[in-house]
Length: 345
Image (cartoon, rainbow, N blue to C red; front, side, top):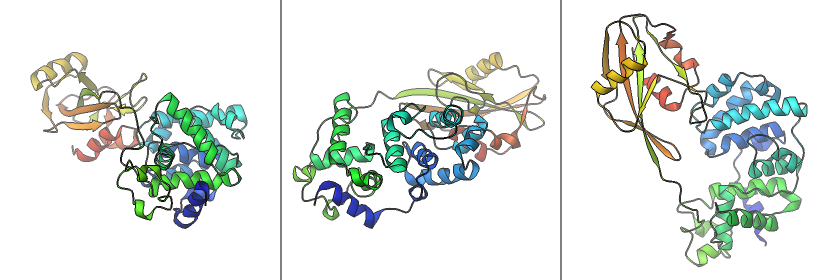
């Protein structure tokens, strides 16, 4: 039995029942693929259901305010995905009359849609024989065929795409693409896979050469950057506080946060108090103290945020203050959301 047939047979017996597998609607397929980028199914599923409930069609998503989209996305991370999601919905409605392109090349023109997502939508929604290559597929192919090219090198990306095309089941592409991704997610897992129970174990080169733990090969990530965040949580007599929206192209674009003083390293209370007085126009007497004794280290892909929350209680009402009780309505980074849930005025 050939590779693709074994994968399909395994899938029919072991696949999970997931809502996006019950439809060919390109909107729902696209939505699920964007949510599941760099996200486990268990984490992404509740978000998919929330988005479908709030925005049942691409028109509904396109007509939503960006803050609604960001708020619903809160906690998933990689917020550029949410902004691209919203922008692409508008593009589909404005430029394509509310209909997703029906070709692989047409799908690639959508914002935030690369080779993998275009291949997934093309094959699942339109039955176009285009192979998908995601992290799960890289792992399955590299182990079974013993490929020792780095999966994130130019040569490796090209090689694996061609290999995926050669071994795919073109006649059953919709099920096959979902099958090989599911196989990587459930059977050929990154660590400690159950090779004894694997239907491909008799011909798996990685198993034969005892290289299961070594494949796939990936070029080392960039050096982790350490950043030091000092959030100033100002509270006035009316239980109002200050929020500001992040701008620019950095992390958390367009999300809301407390006034931030970023430093090159940790600084003490005296220096921080001097700095915030210069940058924030806060009148009256105040009490100033550190909320968390130890840094909260928020780990992102290429940077670690060493975070301290400083409480600043002032006896003068804030100009343009926001009621603290309304903060849960704002789209904020999960780091801020966790603080809001913990802090009691």
